[in-house]
Image (cartoon, rainbow, N blue to C red; front, side):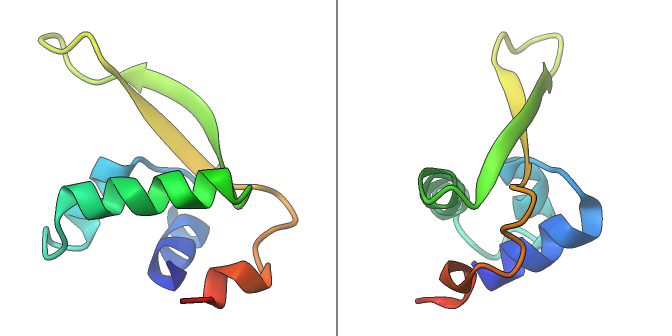
Length: 79
């Protein structure tokens, strides 16, 4: 989860898919989605906005950022 924190600090906001591509697809995408879910439930990240994914997909891509003030929360470094 520290790597997600570092990546979000670097890019500002992004989606689980963007992070998966950044990691070079070395981790299963479903695992990345679970990490983002856990971080959101813990209150460390939040949805900033939704953007169109593509013309063919009706599903909007959610972009996340670190909740202001939670950049150095100790929970980032657990597990």
